[in-house]
Image (cartoon, rainbow, N blue to C red; front, side, top):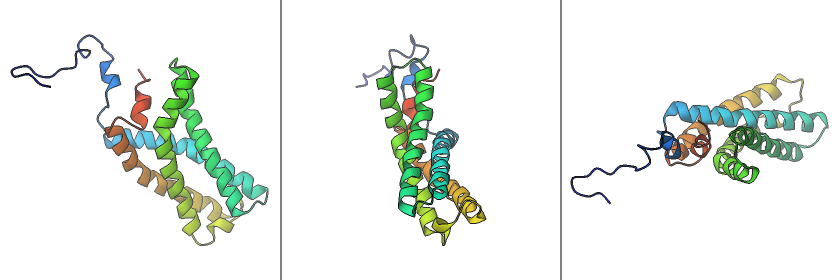
Length: 170
């Protein structure tokens, strides 16, 4: 509540030089793009590894896609965990931070990425030595990046998503 004649201020802002790290930062497009790039890195590693392993083993489309999605989440969360743990946070808190920061971003990225590949004619049947395999995968990740960036901008602006991770970076 604001009192007449007194501006509302954060009592910690003047005494705590890191107080700004505990409030949501402005959700600019560059911050959203960086958060999405971070997410894309983990997703791409997991996605490519899953697709390569499943395709090389001759698995069908469904088990290969499931493996790729599971690995995308695993690598995406792992990258965040590594950074949060390096900030001195205990494992339980770090896992919670990673889940809060990355789940929506990875889910949107995987939905779009795999949706593009499913809809791309013959992409699901392409083999590792086929340009269609690598081209459709690259383009699907680029489309997923473009769609996920506004999602991350929205969540960061509300103090969620990657804004949760930023509390642990100084």
